[in-house]
Image (tube, rainbow, N blue to C red; front, side, top):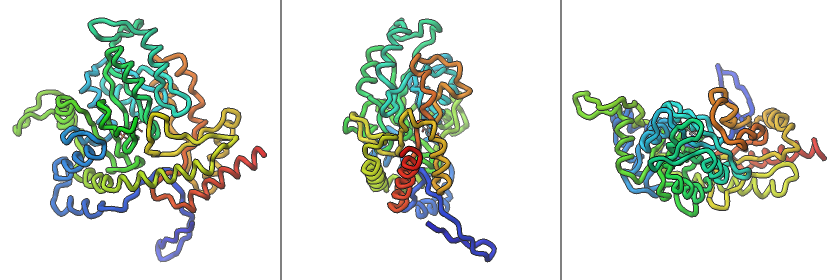
Length: 403
Ligand SMILES: Cc1ncc(COP(=O)(O)O)c(C=O)c1O
């Protein structure tokens, strides 16, 4: 693919890069953003914010007024955790494999993540490890759970939608009920995903979504907190708006300036209008990878879990253990061919700020997961010719190295 651009009257010809996940802006984005400018509503007040919240409610299958738009997914997560009762010094269970924001949102509150293992097929929180750890390391007091050695309260369990795949929420929710621990889903990458044929807003569990630029749809930067519980919604809305209680600048607690702006909401609304189409395109991209990479000796393509219908936000190859020492060469080879691929999330137990957390025995073993995972170009507007190029290059790399 060649791109020709003019700079200082010279014509420069350069190769266009194939990206992993970039915004697909083909709808009312310019129209709605222009409305923000012409109406002068460019900040955290304006008609697009309500419209965005309502449209998200419809798309995820939750009642109107059960969503709060925030400045980022991380902000939504932090406020969501506070609203379900997380306090400083509490423990919050998270899976070892997630983006660092899951752990950071907990740290911002002064609580600590407790790291549990993931299952090996879809890399989501492993209910077996969760149950084993809670059984072995916690005790009950006043209808709450506490850690046996630190006596910290277990305030919440945060399963994560990894790459658009739902965790096994039936099993995890049962464990949460059994141990009387609240649950909050980090479905930052989960818009358009379903669990047991239910949209993420129909699961009866509070959660968050990210609309960062690399997500299925984007508001530039932004997030949503959703919950069926009115008091959680009111509390998050209040906290996100500096806890202001009057128009005389009275504030009843230390709040946050975490509201979404009208500009972000305008972009997000235009994107939401295209969600079904984008999800269809992403499924087609996944299906082509699946057909072409069927039964490889060298890797598997991560599929939708049995219990979920994935949004296929980003497709991933999982390199078989005996070939992972070649993954950096594969990345270099693809980069040399103008495919902008790099390693993805590093597991939380191996991140500098989180080296000393409490973690399950098996969660400590996931050191190689980053090296095993190769993200594949998955942008909704990815051209078929480019996807075929990626597929052929990957097949060629393994053939050249191992046949
Ligand atoms: C799993 C996960 N959690 C949380 C976040 C945070 O969202 P944001 O980038 O909108 O703050 C992200 C986004 O990148 C994510 O992938």
